[in-house]
Length: 461
Image 1: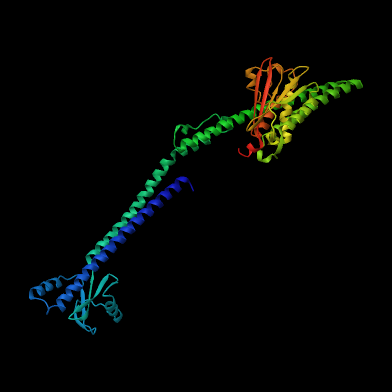
Image 2: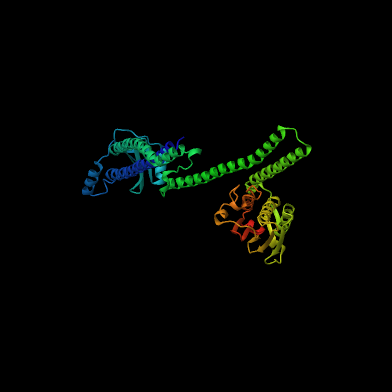
């Protein structure tokens, strides 16, 4: 069911319920008022009958004449009965008969006043004391005039109710269309957006209402999608280029080697060159897989308590295997008293990859005899690892792009690498709710700062 139809139905149902409750209440209380009011008039007729019939010999002629005038002011279809103490009918007036049962008489004698409704006819019976004896007086009538008014009111309410519901349905349709018109415009604009024109944006984002908030949220999502698509295109283009280079070199070596018969030493050289290219392909493939793994949701990556200093020592040992000439100095800026101050929560394999990449980059771009310093700083909520080298450094423009996959600064083009290390490290550190910052100056070295939350701070986040 469309929202427009649902809104119309809900609006109609609410209004119909309110109008129905109002109409029923008006009719019910009008009927109740008429009934009670007419019972009062019949009660007055019963007392007027008692005064006229029973008190004629006990009052003055003037009072009897007054009682007579009141008695003859009859109600429509009026019937009156007077019974003596022996339940004998001593006076009756009216053409319509009413059924007076012994049970009704007994009830009147017990209660003193009884009101009975028989279809449209209302009856009032009273107990009247005359000369020390109890008489029963019953008066009955039909409120023809007010019943006709009540029937007219019922017809008016039903007609008004039906007419109002029809009007409400029509107004609801118009209202729902007007209310949903901005949403329909948003839908029509969204339908025009596809992968080839993610630059489009919704025009309703300037409003402060819910439609404006929806459009703003959708535009923000489009911004993220456009950035992701652009990053994906850049990633695919760069990855294909990096993969194609060693493959092209391998194919070229093999084609040249197959042109003519060669000496075993020449074949050995070709195989060695192909092996090096294959190793480059393996490193590149592993880096790409690690980047995918680092982009995984943190809930799917096993985490455990780890000591920051032990991670740094393991990473330094692994980095020395890759850069044997590297000299690494690891120290604490302030050694904590408790071991728990050095605990982080993370995945050991991923954190080692990130730290090894940072250390290897520092050594790789520091010349023939790289000297690297790593400092562990313990703060209240975080642990900070700062890796400093005295290498070739980078320009401010290159620093802004160091976390873009496959980006390589102009001054390191002749140094082997794929531009995956720092982007991979950034993904891993963000996966652990930390941060990584690169500060570098050309020909003066680079400082990489890794910040990770302590174990007990992770549970607070």
